[in-house]
Amino acid sequence: MVKSSPFIKKFKVWTWMVFILIVIISFVTLFQPYRTTLEKMILENFVLTSEASVKTIDQFILRSQENAKNLSHALVQHGPLDDYLNGRMTSEDVRQLSAVSFLRETANQPHLTAGVRLLFGQVNATLGKEYLPALLSQIQTDDPHELQSIFLTGRDTPVLFIAVPLTANNQIYGYDLVLYDISSLTKSLNRDSLAFAFVDRFQEKQLFGAGAKQRQIGNAVLYDNGWYTGFCLPIDGTSQSLHVSTSNAVLYDRLDDILHLNLLGFALAVGIVLFLTNRFIVYHIRHLAGHAEKTKAVYMDIANRDQLTGTFSRRYLEQWKHANEALSLLDMTHYVLAMVDVNDLKVINDTFGHKAGDSALKYVADTMSRMLRTGDVIIRYGGDEFLVLLTACTSEEADHIFIRVNQALKADPPFDFPLSVSFGTALLSHVEQMDMVIHKADEKMYAWKQKHRMAYA
Image 1 (cartoon, rainbow, N blue to C red):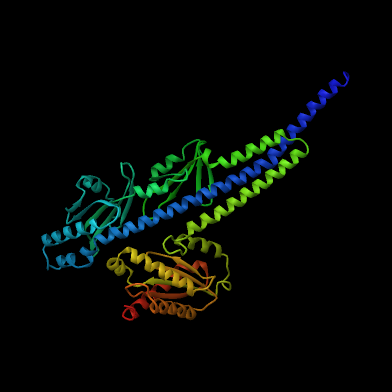
Image 2 (image 1 turned 30 degrees about the vertical axis):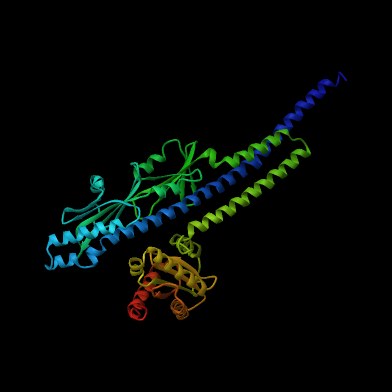
């Protein structure tokens, strides 16, 4: 017994060494690859969640820009400025009409906190005089004819600044400068342990400072400084980006818990226990991977859907083009592209309100979904436009489909106003011809609108 004690001690030492070696080999060959795979899935879901938030911002900007442009509608589209240019009205009369119209329209707009109209080089009307210096300081002179949109967050209440040039005969006679309160938007974004901030190009470069690790996930470049992971997404219609970040402790919380728990199981297991622990790990990792895939699919659908109509968003069109760019001429023969425009949506919005206009858009989208086939794709292309991709049909058959859509809209309208669409179709023979085909279908759609304007009025 005594003589065997040194052997037993050596055996125990060797047993522990073999056990530690097994743990190290298992960690390197099993845990590390799985950790890398799961980290990538987590980051992909992080990016998709953020892209869905950018879609919300894009829609807020689009609606705010439409509201801002409506302020100048009475001045530019309804005649006073044109009457002044033709000598039928004095500048003083134009200023008086303009000021009354501006103050009336701004009072009815949601989220608008301040505004000023500049006309003939002077301040014509002001809502919220305390904001006047801030509004005037934001005008960009690089391209004065373009509508400008800038998020201003360095204040108690974050706002969206929009500058709309007042033009006639390609000349600028003034600007509408407005601020929209975005506090409700920022509150809805900063959720689920995600932090959002609006940054310009200079601030964006500072975020990717020295020492931060960078990683490519899809089209996004993520940085990791050891404490936080984040990236920037460009915001359509502005020169700014949305900076999204989250704590690494929160981002990898489930991953670290699972791996630490299983490593502890490895340290305590011997023999058959080690084998069962490995099976347990594989099961849970597969379960987590399956959950991550399902979550990825959900956020992918959210990012690709228009929240109002339920159709695909314009972002999805780029994915469709990428997925079909390798198709041959023969493969693409049976694709027909259609541009569909909801007639008089601007009139419906102005007369019955934006809620009625939104309901009309959704009703048109639902009607097309019922009339089209499963493989056809409906994309909301603009404010009142849809792009439709039809498979296995000719242009004539596509025209007949949209004629039946108009018949369905006319047969049992649920609104107090008539509803119809104008459309144009063209054959899509190759993905590279997409822009040209869209232009061709667009021209046909406008030709249809002119020809049938009285019929669907």
